[in-house]
Image (cartoon, rainbow over all chains, first blue to last red; front, side, top):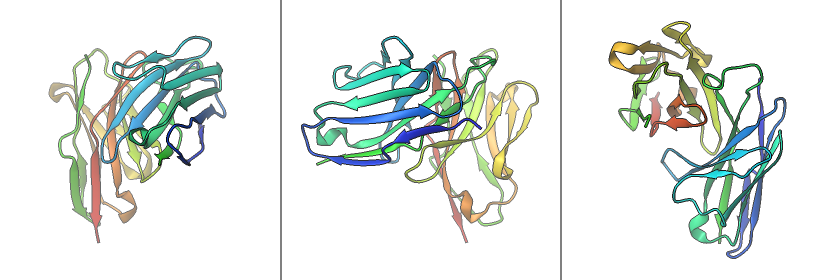
Amino acid sequence: GAVVSQHPSRVICKSGTSVKIECRSLDFQATTMFWYRQFPKQSLMLMATSNEGSKATYEQGVEKDKFLINHASLTLSTLTVTSAHPEDSSFYICSARDRAGKSSYNSPLHFGNGTRLTVT
Amino acid sequence: AQSVTQLGSHVSVSEGALVLLRCNYSSSVPPYLFWYVQYPNQGLQLLLKYTSAATLVKGINGFEAEFKKSETSFHLTKPSAHMSDAAEYFCAQAGFNKFYFGSGTKLNVKP
């Protein structure tokens, strides 16, 4: 099945530093990847849609300059949390859709295992 | 805009009992609906998906869901709960380039 690999699974950083999270589709090509943020005991909040070869589309209220997204290839998207602050501590999850030969509507999202970011 | 509603943020059942997790979707033609499960500190795993081929959809781990257009519902069920089913479950509806997630239901299974 479609596998999405996300690294690191857990990261602790100091306030003011930047952290990069990688999301890779291992056995399929993903023209679009999605980045979510999940607060404790809450649902997923879509942060941005990452499009290969073009700029990401950010959801309302998400700071573009703080959460930098780069979708350099059909299998890799990165999220960089710049100048991290304690309030950025959260669980970040990436996902991707395998669109090869399928309708875009009924293709499920495949999720990475998430990254637990703790900013001290 | 599309929306997904999950009734009951917490559901508790005894081991061996029926599991019923409720999901209502906003009407759209056609609806593409999914159920995901999330274990602590992990991403989401696809349980099953509805794509209009059949109203009763079977998924992994013994779960199934029934699509009822008249009720705009897509409830998730499992005849007999197992301790390993304890997790959080999310219902989702797909748009062209977005997924709309419900708020999640945490399933607790009592021994």
